[in-house]
Amino acid sequence: MPETVTVRHARLSDVEEILLFWTRSAEGKNVTDDAGGVAGLIQRDPLALLIAEVDGGVVGTVIAGWDGWRCHLYRLAVDPAMRREGMATLLLDHAEQRFRDLGGRRLDAMVLDGNDLAHSAWASAGYAAQPEWSRWVKPLK
Ligand SMILES: CC(C)(COP(=O)(O)OP(=O)(O)OC[C@H]1O[C@@H](n2cnc3c(N)ncnc32)[C@H](O)[C@@H]1OP(=O)(O)O)[C@@H](O)C(=O)NCCC(=O)NCCS
Image 1 (cartoon, rainbow, N blue to C red):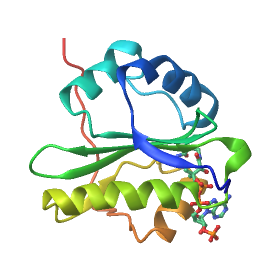
Image 2: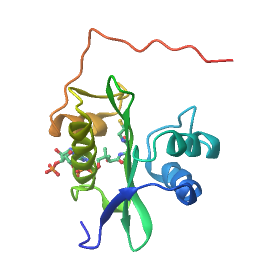
Image 3: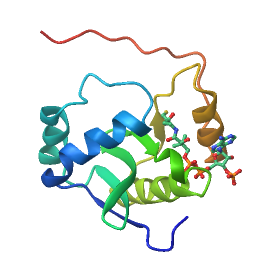
Image 4: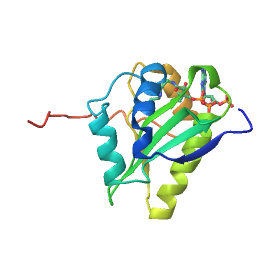
């Protein structure tokens, strides 16, 4: 990992760059992957979206979402050119510290069943699947 890597909270001025970064580095596309969705997150909770930067460019992200009840992790992604150097581990360390500071008790991440790469990364960070649970969704109209 480059020595110049830093982790900070995303600002509204980062939104477009983060969206571009996700198109080349993240898994799939979320219903909230647009300027309004990301800006809404930053406005709602300015400490939730963490970005790793090298030389002023985004090379990693994770959302550490706290709703006062649970600790949810989303959008863990690392630039394909900088993988396997500990960047995801660094971002998760920061996210976990945020949850610890907030009094969180357990962390969860939504992970696609077929994303073997993600399974390795989450397992290596100490997370385990709960096969008895499924996600139920309904679009809000
Ligand atoms: C998953 C992802 C975030 C991992 O980022 P990373 O910076 O490469 O991860 P790290 O270097 O911190 O690796 C941590 C551990 O995860 C595991 N791991 C990461 N990449 C792996 C790979 N290609 N094969 C096997 N294990 C892997 C290893 O155990 C690794 O530790 P090690 O390198 O000491 O063996 C990155 O591959 C990525 O952005 N993937 C696409 C987006 C994605 O699927 N995100 C997860 C959504 S749920």
